[in-house]
Length: 124
Ligand SMILES: [Zn+2]
Image (cartoon, rainbow, N blue to C red; front, side, top):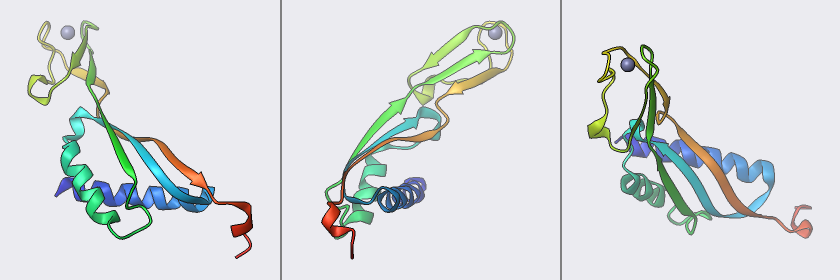
């Protein structure tokens, strides 16, 4: 399953952030998922919740925003916006040239919200 490896990768980044920023807990993770990644938000959330079960990240909320695909024709320069994978095509409907993808291919961790550890805990 595609989403499971993404959730694992996400967890790695979160754990790294917890270490570098000395966070005691993470309340929310904000994700921007490009439409072309074909990630199903519900599946990703399910995988994430399964992975963090019985860990300190158990109550972390996953906030997933789908980023539509924006493309620009290399021929005529026309820009296109696709809100759904079904609409998407790689060739310009106007002139038949290739469409360059500008957004919608990436998965971006936009924000990791957490609480920093209290000073008295840093001595241990
Ligand atoms: Zn075109």
